Length: 156
Image 1: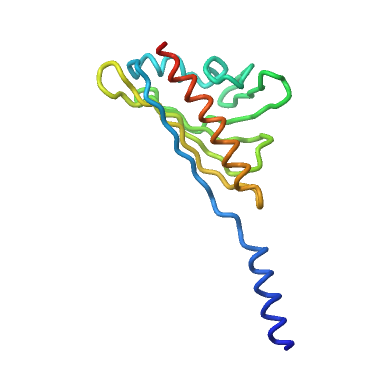
Image 2 (image 1 turned 180 degrees about the vertical axis):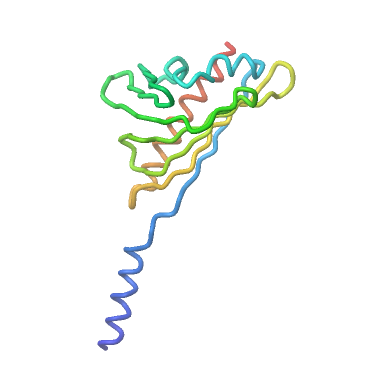
């Protein structure tokens, strides 16, 4: 009986101590504008304040941007980690946010789809906080969808 109890306790400890797996998200939207036009509007690192409906302000200091939501209650600090304007893409990492996650890295990319159409792809990898996997996925998914919906409307 003592051995069985020890095995059960060790099994429970292993379950509790198991690390949270990294997660990823990949969303995209087609836009009825040439890639160069879309990139001109969304490519600058602080342009997010112009196309994302939740962002009210963006300040930039070197490769770091600080985003403030329109209600002024929430800030995000993000560092640009890579940029290729010829390939119309940039990547960034979150340094500070209220989201239940860590190790967040993301890429925003515009790809030409013929002469007058393009696709905007926004993808991320991150580690959700333990027990907050669904909260993190829902938050990031909502942020991305709201931004991509607004980008699609650039052509209207």
